[in-house]
Length: 118
Image 1 (cartoon, rainbow, N blue to C red):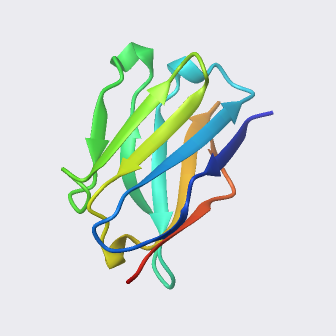
Image 2 (cartoon, helix red, strand yellow):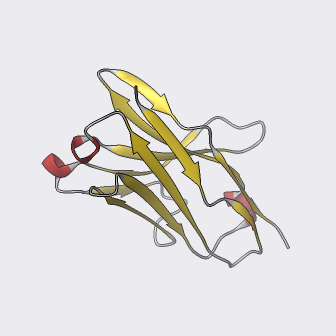
């Protein structure tokens, strides 16, 4: 059974940093593309960052709104996914979700709340 567990969210001032983690189990982690999504209140869930598995050499992609500020990375030995978020803005506020596709089905973590406010 695939399980994704996020952690690392919290309250941070504008301009601050947070590092999110996602612990994965129940799948061959290293071969799967992993994603971070976020959802602000009354907004649709949006894709923030993607990192490919070993077959894609760990290539990354970012939403335009976070390019240059966020960095997605992974540790295939620890089976963990990360999102380093710098220069945070109030519009980055939302619930951040770890996601992957396994045997054609999407799997989500429970989410971790990030709030950027003075």
